[in-house]
Length: 112
Length: 112
Image (cartoon, rainbow over all chains, first blue to last red; front, top):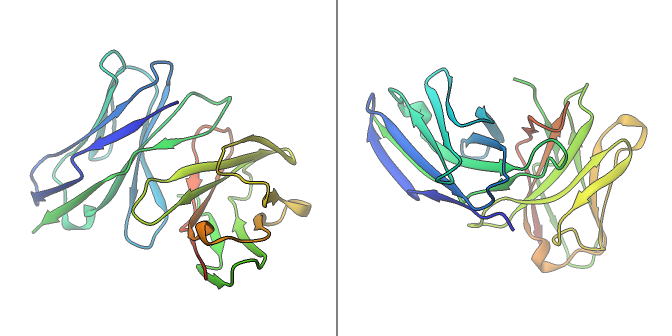
């Protein structure tokens, strides 16, 4: 059964400093990885999806997937206070299932 | 981006009663999902639904749960009868291709 873990549980950075979040997964056949963001009381906002090893950039968000080491990272370039939120990693095994397995999330706080 | 709506945002009911949670998915989407998040825990997959049928469900999707999308309107999750452990935030999601899922803001269900 797929296990997804995120670290750190919470992260505080200053405005403009790079923020890096980590996600590990257990099923090597996983081929579908997403980072979502959730502001308090709101729904999930998809930030970046990645399907193959390497990097994928969407605006200020870059996902880095290394399937061999079972890691997918999210780097946030020049974060702003409005980026303070819960960041969730979600993993699935492709279009046949659509079932996403989520981590517990990392709470990011960006100080002005 | 595409918006998924959920009605109501909060629902409080007595144990044993029936409850229906409503999801208004993105208009041209074909795949629909429910996830459950108990306070302080990670979001967990309940069920996905396509072409009028349940495609996959998890162990959390008890016999008391049912889903439907009558006449292409709301996608609903019905719980009958409810139990105390059903208290959680329920998130609906929809997708055009079973890859990119767009989430609603959630319905907070409290069972007393």
